[in-house]
Amino acid sequence: MPARRVAVIGTGYVGLTTGACLASLGHVVVCADADPHKVERLREARVDILEPGLPETVRDALDANRLDFTGDTAAAVAEAEVVYLCLPTPMGAGGAADLAAVEAVAGQIRDVLPPGCVVVNKSTVPVGTCERVAALLGRADVAVVSNPEFLREGHAVHDFLHPDRIVIGAADRDTARRVADLYAELDAPLVLTDTASAELTKYAANFFLAMKLSFANNLATVCERFGADIADVTEGIGRDPRIGSAFLRPGPGWGGSCLPKDTHALLTACDRAGVDFPLLRATIETNVTHQRRLVERVAAACGRGADGSLHGVRLTLYGLTFKAGTSDLRDSPALAVARLLRERGAELTAYDPALHEDRPDLSDLVDLVDDPVRAAEGAAACVVLTEWPELRDVDWAAIATRMAGHEVHDFRNLLDADRLARAGLIWQGVGRAAAP
Ligand code: UGA
Image (cartoon, rainbow, N blue to C red):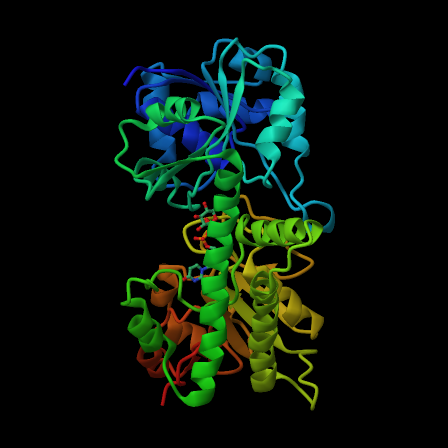
């Protein structure tokens, strides 16, 4: 495979992973970012996101002179054969994807792209964006290709180097193959298609994952009502390869920087196109009703008065990040649950193993404490919201002596009920019978 000269615009977790991993495959990569402070740090292999293996991959590529960072987008693309756009597409007006960053960069590079180069969009964008970027570039000699990424935060390097599939959408097969050649070292099935299909594939994938989770969370409630066990039911169905066992663990709702924004963007795009997609609407609504139901449960156990008010009730929350293995709080379901508890008047303390250094300011919502035992002081109940494995091994006996109540609402089904019982605590999971 010939080494290519590649530019990557945007060094978020997708862009940085893409740049560093393409360099590790032998390509010569320049990554551009508008934030000069970030560029300076990355040149020293200082990676500010929690992503296993990424600092090492960046360091190795820098040492091999196959990776560089710049604040100058035009300079980054000047020599490139392939230009990757890895830009944020946050939730904008009415739930639609906000394409301002993509459009701004298209304007910055249109006159400096080398003749015949390929622009590859990796950002999650609505169908038609490749065409829009091509129109903004106005360059008949430059092809715009969709190559969505399916990386999970916390597994980005692994997912990049071991993809389940590589989806490339282009106007013609030759252009798609030119991009596919960059990944020749990777052993993955190729899906070569048109740009609209590739763009939609990304939304369809994230919607399907969210749908599985809403299904599992709803099924958990059904299990509770019928005295069934969600772990056994999901194992029983998941062994059928047509269903699959992944992504069926109930939790406090799904969140993160992708699933909420992408499901909303797809729904908005469908609405605007006059296509009804009730399953998608239900998937999003179920996430909200599920969280309300979990909060009801806590209020029923510790609340005061008939309306389950939590005024004057102290609760401690374990885990605030949107999942374990990341310090990312964006659209975290834990914060959504915390807000619902606050609305009912609860006083909240919180402990999260990823939020010691660089502590975010969450003072409007929770009192963030560095130590789980101290966080439990005076709490009527403990609510587990992120599946950090280390929470299993905190000093539950000491926590029990500090708490005012005895209940642990484990919304990730993480903890061992017997171990908690020995500490004098009562475990309540999701979709499972309470400990005897
Ligand atoms: C998600 C997708 O999994 C990736 O394939 C996709 O590339 C990425 O979005 C993206 O579009 O960039 P990520 O946001 O890192 O990746 O998070 P996930 O691991 O998918 O978790 C999403 C949410 O579902 C989290 O809140 C997590 O706790 C929850 N979850 C996941 C469950 O509650 N139960 C499960 O069984 C799995």
